[in-house]
Image (cartoon, rainbow, N blue to C red):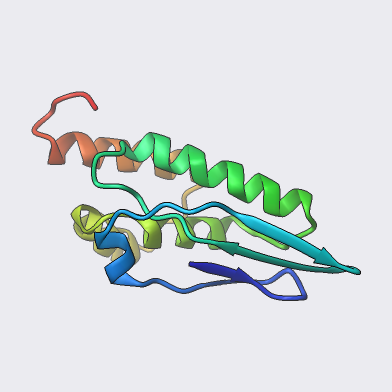
Length: 124
């Protein structure tokens, strides 16, 4: 779950139980004056390829940016990593320890490669 405060700052909040259930929600954006509040509840479903999951998140990121939310690249990557299934825990650890600085498109390619390894080199 990600919350955007009145200043447009994103605050990720990860609930492991929700990820296990493969819940995917919709972005809800409401405006009252100049305030923007956005709540995103998007978790990768176990049978959803990582590419399609990230594309879905990118749509939400664009929507939030269109509504004047301050959403930098690092926050987007943090949201993506926290929304992935437990299968990607090894990738997340390596990413955090490696101190990589990737753009979102590069991260998607890296995750797809990792997913390919997880699926014994079968295309997803």
